[in-house]
Image (cartoon, rainbow, N blue to C red; front, side, top):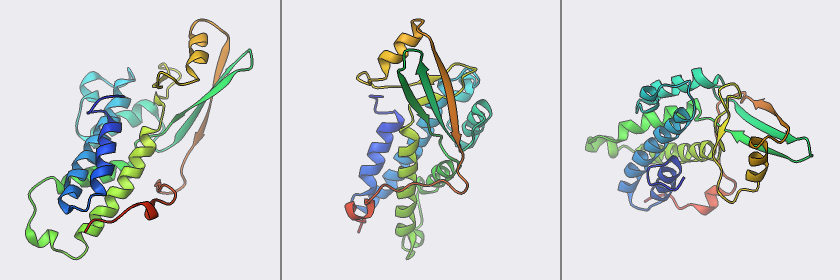
Amino acid sequence: MDSPVSAISYLGRAKELRLSEDRASQIYAALELRCGVEARLQEHAAATTSVSKRQATRYEIAKIGKAIDVAFGLGDSLLIVNLRMEDGRECNFVYAPVSDRLKEIAMRCGDYLHAMRLEKVSAPNFWNELSAMLEEGCNLLEVACSSEVLCPSLQDGLHFSLPLDDPRIPIVQDYQAGARGSFSTVKFTPTGRMTFYPPNAAAQETPPK
């Protein structure tokens, strides 16, 4: 979504800011990350009729997150949606949630968005802890934003977002035009706390000074 207030746009700015050598940029990264999580939750909520318009525009992460959990019934589970056409063509779409861990991190980001005491920011582990939280949060938000499926409910109407040049679009258009096909789903549920770190990320990054 090409918008400065889309989740992916907030994520891009958060990733850039958190890698800055300017410590103050870490604070701004926390703001962008929190807004990115709020935006992604709102994007999911807006795609389903099971969440009211009033709920879909909430900024309280816990409340909008709960509404989405009730609507989708998936929690932290990932869903792969397969569309198989009778002519043999098929394609997959992925739903990746805003995980409980990511919502927890986003709410913690709120602690950094107010004026802070000097003794707090002078504590030995303050900046390291903030940096680690931003790294994990940005990576988890990247997973959530990689999801094409905004509403994973086949009953309420599957809703997903694809770029204009995506090769799966003609298959979907044919299905919508009446060509025969069927959907199936596979659910993956994490057995522990969900997290994600890109390969070789440590070698590509310079910690703030």
